[in-house]
Each structure stands twice: as structure tokens, then as C-alpha cells.
Image 1 (cartoon, helix red, strand yellow):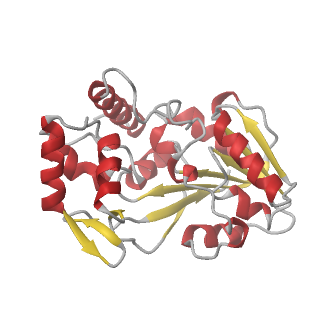
Image 2 (cartoon, helix red, strand yellow):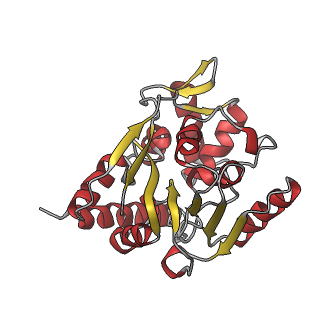
Image 3 (cartoon, helix red, strand yellow):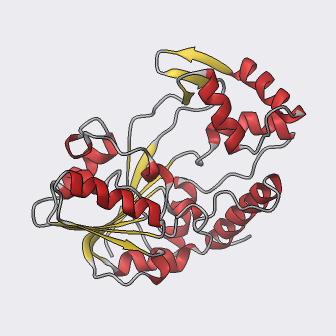
Length: 280
């Protein structure tokens, strides 16, 4: 039986091979291609103008409880600042490490616009980043893109004076797209790792974390069918006007249902985020 770390590596590599094959050799979700050496995950969400005042995000509210005026935060893969910007309004200092130059520029621009001066942005992958330790090391929706998890996770602990806080999903990221993938390509995609896999990896590394789960959210894809079609074409590598596109649109007719929250996908579990945290 493969170790948890080996299973993690194999799972991500298999997912990457499938994605590359669909895209004609272009890797799809690797942590370098998406800026995850550091990460994208939810951190590439469009910057909101009310960022520093947000209280409508359960994960962010939990992070607020861990941060005070004397706290330093290191956000690994912080992207455009989904968490870094609001946390900077409450923390002593926030350092963001992310390899995406474009995301770092957006982060710095938004911080300057809001008069936030206690954010340092470091354009680098995590493995080679040279940064000082912080009280809290945050890593949101990044680890499921990191094949060689052990050194990455060890460095998180080495740079955390108090606690590592990893935000991940209970079901693998991309689950909401899986029914369409199967309908179009005739097979189920290899899932990326999720919280259950991360727990196994950490236990194997003699790390015994706490976990806090948050309320589930409906499996909503988009607010309208045009947006859903554009999103799915991009995510599962479908060209407009092809037989695959015909199958995709047939799948949308069958699988999408209108809800008060938007277009939800039939048969997909509600999505749940959690914070897996541990002391170094």
C-alpha cells in the first residue's frame, strides 16, 4: 500500500497528465502554472472594494479570531489578497508570497489605493522564497496543487512562530465540474487531493492538526447559462462548435437547475471549506 505522501503525489500527477492531454500538452492546474507555489485557489477571486470590511466570509471570520494588532501573518500563495488585504487591517504586518507578478501588482495597487502600508509582497515560489518567520502562516487552497507536499509543508511549519492555518476543501476542488467532464470526455477525472487526503499526509509526517469545518454552500456554477458555458469550456477544454461542445451543452440542459443562489449542478454535494491548523 502506497504511503499517504506517495498517494498524494500520484494523484496530483495523474490529474496533471489528464489535464495536459486535454489541452494538447499544456498543464492545467499545477501549482506553477497557476501561481501556486504559492497558490491561486480562491485567492485569485476578483478584488472587492469592501475587502477590508468583509464579515460575510466564514473562513475570513475565523482568521480574524486568530489575528490581533500584534500578530504577523505570512500568506503563502496569497495572490491578489483575498485574505491578506482584510487581515492587514487587523494585523501588525502581512507578508504575501506568490510567484504571479500580475497578482502581486494587483495586490500592491489595491493596498496603495486603500492606504494599507503594512503588506509586503514577495514575488517568488514558496520553495525558494526567503522570508522571515511570522506568527501565523496561512496557506489557502494551495496544497492540493503541490505534488511534493512534504518539503512544502515542512517549510510552512518552519516559518510559523505560532500556527500554520491551511484552508482546503472537503471535496476535491473541481468536483462541481466532474459531471460535465464525464459527459463530454466519457470518463471521470482523477480528483485533486482534499482535506481527508491532507489529514493522512500530515499524520504520516507526525503532524496532528486541529480542523474547523464551515457551513456548506450550494454547488452553484454560475448565475446564468452563458457564463456557465464559457466557464465549463475553459475548465474542461472544450472548443466552441465541436462535437464535445454539443455534448457539453446537452449536459448543461440535463444537469443545471435554477436555484435562488444561481445555477446549481444536480447530484453534486454542497461544497465545504475547512481550516486545518497545527502548531509547529
